[in-house]
Image 1 (spheres, rainbow, N blue to C red):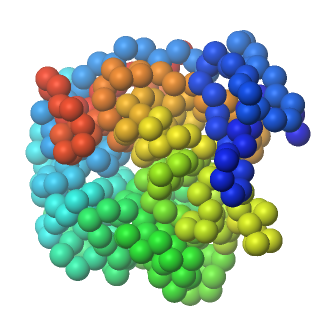
Image 2 (tube, one colour):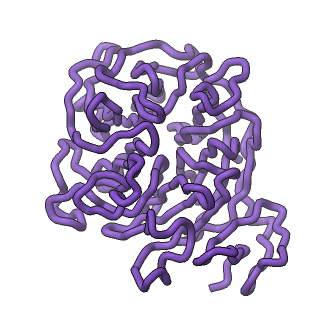
Amino acid sequence: MAVAIALVVAAVAGVATRWKVLPWVPDASTTGTATPPDASSAPPKVSDPTAVATGLAVPWGLTFLPDGMALVGERPTGDVQLISTDQGAVPVGTVPGVIDDGEGGLLGLVVSPTFAEDRLVYVYVTTNRDNRVMTLRFTDGRLEDPTPLLTGIPKAAYHDGGRLLFGPDGMLYVTTGDAGDPESAQDLGSLSGKVLRIAPDGSIPDDNPYPGSAVWSYGHRNVQGLAFDDEGRLWATEFGSSAYDELNLIEAGANYGWPEVEGVGGAVSDERDFIDPQVTWPTSEASPSGLAWHDGVLYMGALQGERLWQIPVTGDTAQQPTATLDGELGRIRTVVVSPDGDLWLTTSNTDGRGEPRAGDDRVVRVSIG
């Protein structure tokens, strides 16, 4: 299949894929047939960022309410802010039991698809015992009534996953990391290193690939980004170890290879049926977290790479990425499409790994096109 990519053969066992940043330049390691991308197919331009809220403590999860305002969670404190373009951030409550443990804390945040009726907000949090999914009720401008929904997800100082997203099927998708135990990603009896799928009430859907199990896909190292495209396909970002970060197209019941494989090469590894990533990056250029879909393009936040990646998609195939906002915001954690079609981004420059600048950490808005 002819696609506009460059295949780089790694000087290690297996094969890895390296996408080139525009302009496309072939190099000596290119193999097979590749053509430079058509400039007319370049993704739309992204505007200069506009600050929506500043002075936040490592904002992680962000979700929009039906009225267009947003809730954003602060990872180390468990505090939740109500934010809008005209009044900045207003505190609305603190999720109880949150532990600031390395990469853990208050992570994913998403409102119920039936929020107008049930007023529920779903959160992914690190406690002193585990990672867990909880619900809170948002009434009269306050979050209250915390209720555990899915508990027992292994926690660690690193690789806690944490993204939440409702699918077009009405189910809740939950990402977990391997919690520092790589082999657990291959263990179907463990919730580590997985994409999970549960019903809004926490029960296991009957059509999950493994009866009685929340596991939707496995063999993941640390997934922090999820997005559904217009056809209902699920895409996910995954942190690599030392070589390659990944963008994966998630299939029910599929094995994505970690820790046996990092990057491309799983399909030929001991004849096991691992699913190869659609795109890989060197870890210095990505360390991918948030992911959003808008009008045929995936938008991926990069932490170590300090940029926003635009990845056009044709059918079920990702095309050549382009970097934008390179270095302008520092570490980009979360990417969400607002009801009016803008992108809202959160930064993670005060998490101990970045270089804070005036106003950090922030929620910013950019327009597309």
